[in-house]
Image (cartoon, rainbow, N blue to C red):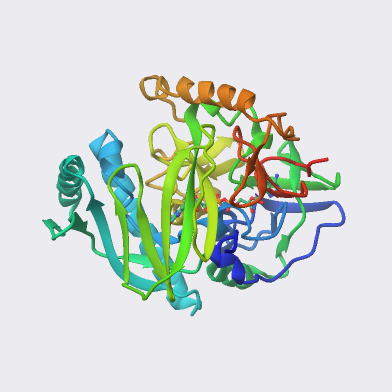
Length: 423
Ligand SMILES: Cc1cc2nc3c(=O)[nH]c(=O)nc-3n(C[C@H](O)[C@H](O)[C@H](O)COP(=O)(O)OP(=O)(O)OC[C@H]3O[C@@H](n4cnc5c(N)ncnc54)[C@H](O)[C@@H]3O)c2cc1C
């Protein structure tokens, strides 16, 4: 059994570390789907653009997803309480899907793109009502498809989904975006950002200074942005993934509500996602498969991503509620318009400064869970904020149940907001 993501069998190109102070027009922090989709979207701009990655490109959350590109996202449209917002999010997802297809075709990217049947399933009777509700909304949005019952399930079959190999896609768009003025640096993490006059000074972990007019924070968990990142608005949700040998069925499916069972196929494997739980409610799981790994994502209070300006010339994009392939593509389109001073129709919907007392009221629950997690761990303390770590038996890692930093069993930093290895 391999305790890492099936995508990690593919080795992406490597990039140098930033060795000296530098001045740039635009700095993108983070080389996952958000950072690289944005780097690609800005590729024809004449300005100087740097992308810096703390670790290696694509090795964060993006390397561990199931990499479906779909608008059928569990029962998301009924969770977004406002009809107009739900419709706008649906249209945004369709636009993101079309953009992937356009880029992959135009650039002839070999990333195992497949167009597959896209299915929402009800496993239990109580879920049927929810499928009907989702169908009703999708019909109102103009989607022509209908729900139906088969021998074992009640299903809604969507138009289609795309599935890709995420690291092959990221590797290709990184290479396609490089020019003399657009550069990538790996092993270059940003620890601190300071506003000065009309620019930002960004300090790396080696104390090298990057001066940038515009900063785009695409680091998934923007730990160095306190107090702009509101813990009240977000929580972390973890799931486990298993890849098993199976003939391809050319479909992608998910059920409408938790507990999640999500499937997609890749070559002669089926990838299953399940065992979803709040990260702070830590559960060690025992699974068997040829590849077994886990992943977590930032869930937002209103089920919509956080994309846009936090303050002058400082942009953030995160909070994709486990739908970051479409979410990161949307981020790249919104950010491109923001930088070019063009109005974007989703700008208000994704505004990261939005707030709703009514919805945020339930979030103190998550804070209580984190406090509980703080006392639950018993092994080592995370260098990020001192949370005790929990040993993850399945992947042989030390995991932080509060903010998601992860370390190998030898203490080497793998992922998350920590700036250091374990001692
Ligand atoms: C179980 C599971 C399955 C999923 N499956 C799907 C799916 O099928 N379809 C879908 O649409 N979405 C899916 N997602 C969601 C998707 O994987 C994520 O939303 C998306 O990958 C997030 O991308 P990102 O670029 O924001 O983060 P990341 O990929 O983590 O990229 C952030 C990068 O920033 C770097 N970084 C961090 N801090 C710094 C710093 N200080 N300085 C410099 N660099 C820094 C990190 O090293 C990392 O490389 C899934 C999520 C989960 C949990």
